Length: 183
Image (cartoon, rainbow, N blue to C red; front, side, top):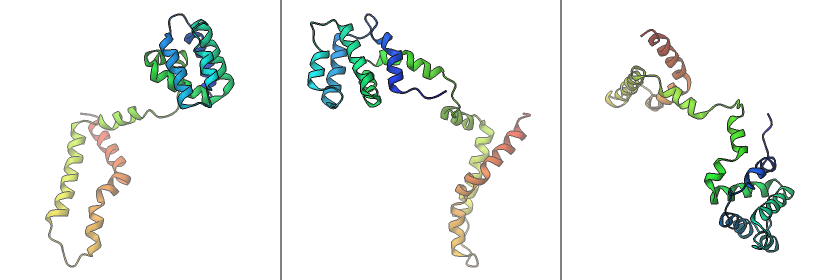
């Protein structure tokens, strides 16, 4: 599935946003003012006055604003969504396009799942890693330096947890999970 553009999302969300009672007059005014003040290239003063005209119904003004943004381009639609998030966050979280994005099939890795995967190893794996780290710390700090050993060897030993983490940890964890799986 191709990623939806902000213009596509705005087309999808327009019927929802223009529904009766979705956005208040104050919220629409704040969105218009934000687009006008921070991004005058999106809404000029003349456009802002037109979309804030109290003589025209709120629904008509909102439809005109959304149509104007759709014709203006992707960046303008994106800034509208940013303003909508700032001034009407509960409504922003209920948008149909957001539900479509959340329910779409995603092939990317979920970073939350990956972090839980590593932290659910159990107490024995934690104690094993802690014991290994404590042993290395004792070896580094408690052993007297040997004059026969090269001075750089102590530095290499100091970086050994990094080396173990990068190259060996996945094999140690796989070994631990295989051995502890029957417990």
